[in-house]
Length: 518
Image 1 (cartoon, rainbow, N blue to C red):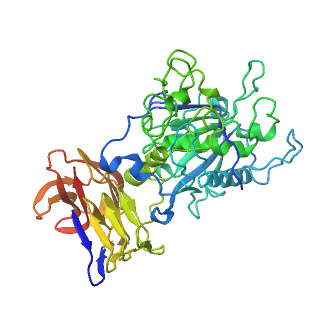
Image 2: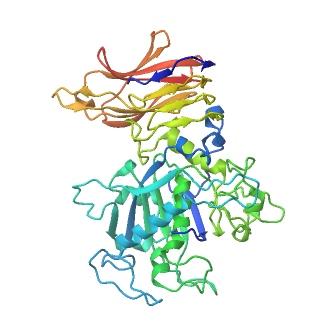
Image 3: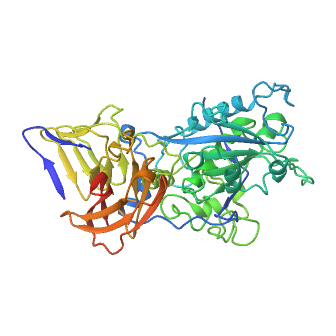
């Protein structure tokens, strides 16, 4: 443990290198990598992977820079353009409630606005004494690249396909839709809005799927979800079938629920739930006599599947049924961990330059950062304040930690890095910045290295090198020829400790970062 405290001068560490309303999720299915219904991975483990260490501190929101998840919205329509929201400029009609329908761009803006309001106003979970975490520290934005002729509506797409329209909700796989229609691949989390009629509905049931969703849970690869019924709920009067929210606002909870599957959350009633024995009352979520939880992630009507989950009194966002309005600290921690440690391509990673005011640890505050964290500015520890860093802390190039007289900085196993690569020169003399991300850090058996280097095909002998703390070369691995790829480097044979990863070309070092082997 390293401590800086009670010094008579400044200690400076420099890095050189709308109101909420009720929501409902009527039906939701998650799928594995081949499109079959399945379960998510088991719970997280390890000190720097404890979900509670990633929950946003509601009293110190500035300590958690807001994260942005990039989305694209897609409407699946018939070949003639019917069956879903219209493009701007296409004729609009009156809905059953007498209003003029919205076009797809206006509908997307309406939905996105309500989603982002919800992300900052979650209600308190009502089935345990879990702390109230209204602010998630996450917002959604539509991703678009200026000048892309195939993206005229800024991240909103209209697809005419009788085939995919006919597959509707039950037969459209999120992964298949992403492979077929994505414009930006791993850079975005694609949401596909589909419609499907029900030929012979049960008495009292609507003639189409409403409030339904489907998500792929291998989220770092897929980043996709299906949401069914938003156009039907907008165009028709569905209040006779289901209470609660109606129209597009209803779908903020459905869409967030499916996104959260991509970010690592399971349904609230499952036995495998990562928060089951932390702050989530899974038995009450299941709400079925004689059953503590569902062994099948999507639930069902049979034994051991939480048949009564739809009428549970819960208000949790990962439920099935009405009133999906809350999240627990553990659930929020799972999401934040996924984004900060796994760093999927749809996370806006903008921690390279100073862009925010200083984070100030005030006198009397005793703050511990026990999970991976990235900042966008400097840190100042005032007289009588104390900050403990226990895991990886990423700070922008040129940022500083200032410990004023009487302040305390404790490095309790923590590592401070600048997370972004330096600028190098390609052979043509054009400035190229390789982007490299390490995760998880600290790590166990495998170190994942995401590399994006447009100059890689021109480099000769580009490689990853692992050195120990004394600078001794331990291993070398080829960087291959792909401009963008994730490499898995085996480190299970290394003793616990601090190491250096270098991205090099010949004898020149293009980029280097420290990592910790547990």
